[in-house]
Image (cartoon, rainbow over all chains, first blue to last red; front, side, top):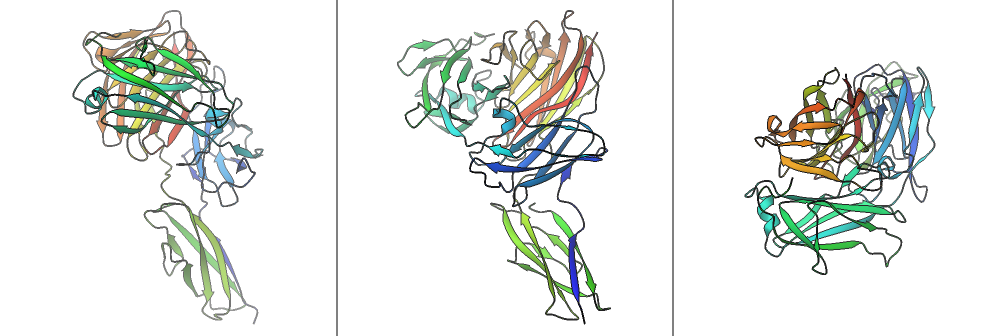
Length: 237
Length: 222
């Protein structure tokens, strides 16, 4: 008796928003050592063409163990973003000067070149806060105060550095950034007065900026500022 | 993906007995007699398992499939929708919705512009802990970002303006529910800023997940 079993899955693993999807974007995600990246989230965002009025669309999928992905999409131009949660690998959509794009005709499959996720390195801004003023703000006891910290991404957009640690006397903002990339870090304070590590006041109410570039082990990765007091209520715009 | 299901089917040839016995190795999740696999509700990292179907007519015949299950990531978008997502007018109350996939939102940004650029745009940063919004200055450029100022949503008499738009902060508000926020911004566009403006949003949560700038609609400034 010749007996054979064929095993198949009925539904695809691709996760997609509802819309006509007659085309596909396929590709592979790798790390800098060209190893496939498993379990990365791939998002394709429809881009509106200049002046056109198109319906928003997004499709998402997780990469397979061999790093491949497949997205069912309508025709159009898409920006393809990739992120692997809780890792140092960087989303090329954020950090590449030319983010992955796919121009997809109707009823066609578009094969993207391999998407390589560069490794990021932590860039930190510490706000030393001996008086615990930020903590009061964090607990909502004093309205209208905040310090936002971020960098300009290559696409020009403001990329905040989220708070990744806090204590009674300090708050740490951190972001994984690429090496050898000149960054502009900006701080904007409302409600607090700030000084740099040497104690010199910085005008963060108007927006304080400084440069950072991670180029090697000796590069400065952490910048420290001090919260020195409160601005008068309504003292900022 | 954690908590999700996948239906497997078999085709047995060479016998009329189509019955198979399903098994998992390792026993990660469950599979029933019809081949419906359900992944574990929670996972700390992606894991691979083998799904096996063993012929009941000839137990030496086995077919296998490799399955990878991943934690946490869901299809739910962190940003959008925006309402209205299309239309025309000089002044409009927009509602921007956002939600965290894990933890809470740590920032939300909303952009109206001809292109995905902060330069000469109506770009608003929302800070969930303080309910402050910041409006971009006209000279926000690829090399740096500046803001014309900030205000707590709903502050009586408050407004923020740049050359493209004015946010009527007093008539703007935010509603929070669990991991979700609805930000209502009353926006008046400058007379000189006519044309089609695309609406984008981006957000990040405390779990480190970020929705990159996502196109959500358009608005025609007459």
